[in-house]
Image (tube, rainbow, N blue to C red; front, side, top):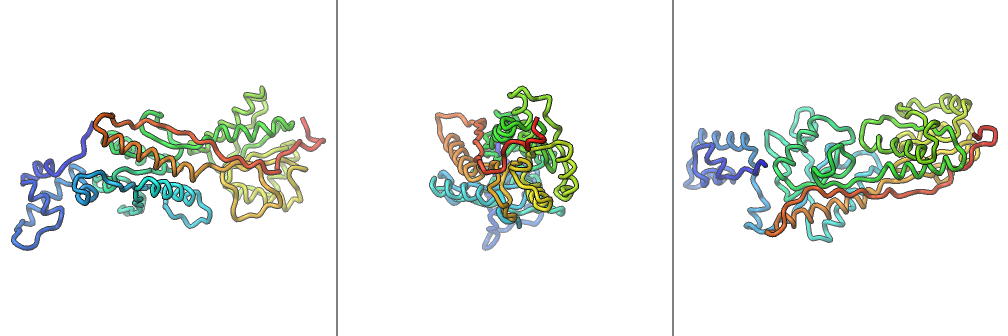
Length: 359
């Protein structure tokens, strides 16, 4: 495993003493200290080559156990949308960290011309300014993210991932939501009520959470011996949902709809424009957070991911990981994986199919 570079490694590569490296990195160039520009350049070049990061926590604690937890996301931590899932996620993290006596450090800079967030900048792991970090996985995986996670694992940097991912469960510690079971429970209710044409709508099936939801849809059909009536997932943006589309599917015999939350507002609006009402004219459920910017005339059936609890558990796992690392008798473990149940909303939008369309 690749070890974290030290000041002695920087000194050796630059051909100077560790004391010289310390002076340059701590900007103590006043008084009687004289260091040439060439020497300083060699040291800084060695720092970049090795990916060395100074440890302010270790310096401030003089070798004691640090208490700073980083928070890193590949998207904006404070998005402009109201009621974004990051709010309860951060709330859970903050409360758990405070209870355990740790501080949170938000890592928000980009440092790239394209404004993309990355863990490594100039070959330097920015997360090392914290003792360990909770990383919110990106909604859409990419090669940069995959390479960075692999590098963190190789460096044995302590972190806990939050959100769905495609890595094996033993690669690192993580906290996810059980989208598949939550979706299966919703669809099972629809099928038990007699629905046989249950549409599945999603903006896309790119991320693991999206695929997990559709897997739950298929699982519900399979467990009830109805795999032959399961419908392919229909993927389109919210702007494609119109009264014409909805009316066409109803005319074809579709009696129930399973929607990912991004499509819920235009669906409810189209339903209202058609003068249709659930569960009298059709049934539907929303997978994920309920829309905050649309007031439905009835409570909507579905579920919500346990964002706050996921934040809490992520901090708890990270602190346990750090405590294990500081123990002389316990090996460092990076393989604990927790799957939390989603929060069900019974609602009132699922009922039997209309008599004329049942079966």
